[in-house]
Image (cartoon, rainbow, N blue to C red):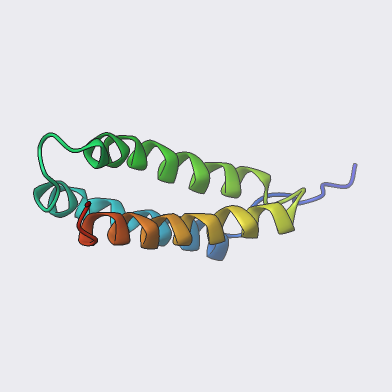
Length: 91
């Protein structure tokens, strides 16, 4: 029987883990956000989205490489959008 090695490469796994590391800045983001702001709710949902996006990108990489890259790019864009959301004052 021929064994076919299929799986996510280690470099992609490492990339997905590195792209989840900005979640450790969540306490800083929360400290910059007002207590009664709807932005705070978005910040509490943000870690779940980031972990799910990285996991799904890692999971689908062997079959659908383009989708995995799209998920990681959206993850990067969500990190940037979260920082913009906190740093831009609400009017």
